[in-house]
Image (cartoon, rainbow, N blue to C red; front, side):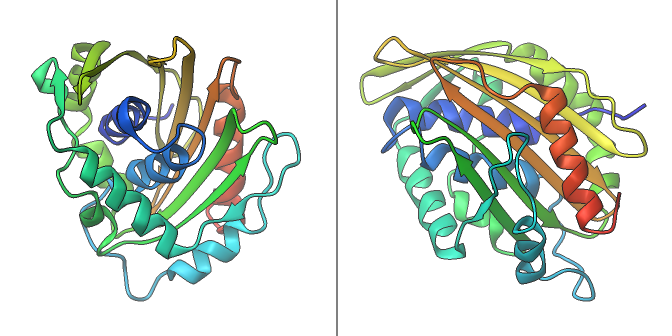
Length: 247
């Protein structure tokens, strides 16, 4: 059975809530920021020079479609950098309660400095939901995830309910772990719900799978309607690993 840990998705869930609290929009930046956070946070080691390049990873994602047949559109690297820069600006004056849940870095750009990664997105035509996938390579990514499992599991329970206060706006959120079933991999899933300032509910689910040096994070985000299920996202992550030769 797959092993489980959570900080990358915990951080990504809080980031989604942060952009809902004061970000430019909930429909576009959140998926393109949250997904690389989940994948890159799985390992602080630089990518193996003999492994995949970011261009290789982008080509892999370019062959993938979501469960409803929508092809992923690869996000240009400069747009990822810009989105992470916007997230860093939002950190000024942010208060997260409980304090133990404040695992967000002050500078999100450091997440991708030494990483080889690519991100693909598939937004719905109505702009209210999207699926995003990030694919990253780092030496020993799966082993590093496993090493930190115990403390990360405890942190998810602590942050099952949380609030984010910023610029006079308060966003309340919940998160819970979801069972994953992928064999021969380290995998985890978290489902989170955020009450937006306009009263709407934003749901997001992220499934992260690490096998060897590769990490895939598949995220579904939807406002006012159910998003993709964890099982569907796990299947999507599996197809990405298969396309990368790790299936």
